[in-house]
Length: 312
Image (cartoon, rainbow, N blue to C red):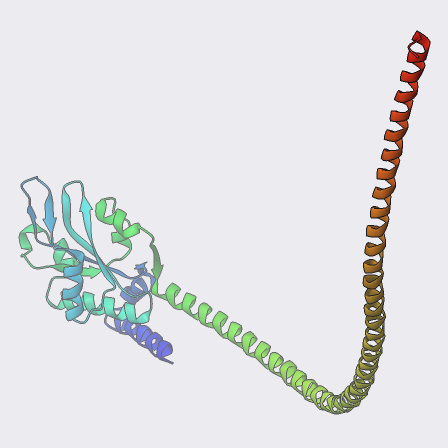
């Protein structure tokens, strides 16, 4: 709504320009081309020469603040520089919409009412004072071959008011078509979503019934499983008790056997000691017998020798 209102004001502005001139001038005004996006030119900015020889002047931010306070709402002010420094000109950029056009035209009207518009600037140096001059850039500014013209051309082109209106209308039609398509897609998506919601609701209802039955079967299964686990646990306990009883019986048998072995070991030790003593006695007797036999042999040898020598 706000954009349409701005557009109507824009068209009213063009109608007002038509009504202030004759028919020939109106035709020229309709075909007049502006620099797009909207941009104004400010001339006669005070400059001074630094000791280095470079010319300097007001900054863009300072000029922007001054024009903003006057209600022109520029988005940016960019001083134009050449090889000498500040050229005394600046570009005044406005928003790229009908509100920006209105601000640009107010900017131009303000300078025209103060007799410091473009025509006043073009009257020549002798008729100028020290104030700023300003206007909205058009085709002749765009086609300038100097530094100002080169800066005006950067990222800009020329469009008539009717072209801008037609382009805006085409954009609006395209926007409406896109919005219509988007709305239609949204409606279709809504219907599909509602259908999915219905299907999901029915599915959830059937799922709830299924869950009830499933829960019942689950509980019955759990009870059966618990009973089987209890039976299995009892079987395991019984098996453990039986195994413990068998192990206890085996342990008692082993204890009894160990006692018998210990008793036998004691008896065996006594018998072994007795046998050892007997063996020692036999060995001693054997040694004695051997010694006696050896002594007997020696006596026999001596007797034989004596007899052989005739000592007897």
